[in-house]
Length: 207
Length: 207
DNA sequence: TTCCGTTGGAACGGTAGCGTTCCGCATAGA
DNA sequence: TCTATGCGGAACGCTACCGTTCCAACGGAA
Image 1 (cartoon, helix red, strand yellow):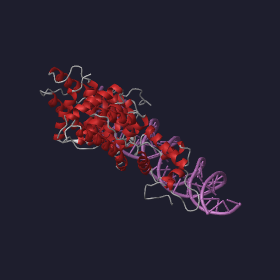
Image 2 (cartoon, each protein chain N blue to C red; image 1 turned 90 degrees about the vertical axis):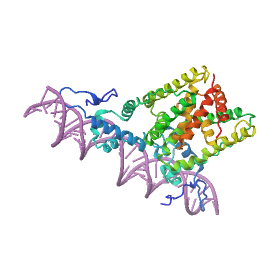
Image 3 (cartoon, rainbow over the protein chains, first blue to last red; image 1 turned 180 degrees about the vertical axis):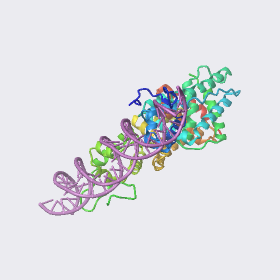
Image 4 (cartoon, each protein chain N blue to C red; image 1 turned 135 degrees about the vertical axis):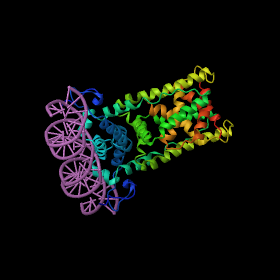
């Protein structure tokens, strides 16, 4: 009974009284299989039984760590989100834009990431708990774009009264749309042109 | 056995030899419940048994019309897609843009449409047959935007060498991103500003 | 009025995941 | 070495949906 828990923090790192600790390699295998299966079947079709099976692990080992699917998803997502803290200064609005777009493309190019992300965006309306889990991602992207805009304002390339919310939409959306929704390509030339055109849009964006 | 069929066209309209025809009200109730359940549970979690139940209809009535879920979805989607043929001329690029954006918003404002659409975009990678079903929608949107660009070229507002593919991304993506992905608002002022800024982007868009 | 196919409803066997519990074994800390 | 705990694996009862089949009742066309 003791593995019925009200919190969502896994015991993975917990040191128990006088004896064994949960094995980190098992936790890792479960996390890996979880994302693998998520990309393959979607969140709704995701079976924890299958996750344990493909991880080569007993179901008990999984349920000892997480009480259910949404807790597992939230916990695992929160452990991934810390990998996009890269503030750059490239000398011009267009160059900064290109760097951000390339960073977005780098993420969206992974087929698993792409599948999980589009699935997640559909699932969030049904499972609001997931929204909380990806909020750090959104905030990281948002801060990155805010930094870009700050520098552009300093260079007097865009108006200080720019609508930052709309700017964020303008920058992230077209590339996401093209790669993740339409499944289209985006070569270097596309990114360069998109950066130039988005730059023109931002220069015209004043509240 | 006779309801195992290789095609996906429902018999709904078929007139049988000398007797009864499948009742149109039953077909309609099934279609209605299908989309209702789709919006509620997502495609993956969609159960035909539940569709029939909530339609107040026996399972046999459903399976007599469609052999399986993907056929039902494709067939029903293809019957919806014909409702966006509205070519407008509003005198300027910005005015045309605003009209298109308002039309997109009008569609995305329906919660059911929004849910089904985001779910669909995630599901397509798993069920490629669905892509075929929404192709007419994409083409309709694309033609609408093409008309807008043609008129802008005639007015010499944008270069004839404009990249139409990128233009389509620029127009549709930010609003979809804001409304469907982020779940954000988009009031009249937002649309007007977005039209103005997108106009600036298109003027700068030359291949 | 006759007749035939559709109707709602119930049931079939089969598959599958859930969340839990039990086993006997492996293992790491004391 | 001792001992407590996690381990893989198997099984539990439960629920749900699949795709099919049967039935008595209904209703429209000839």
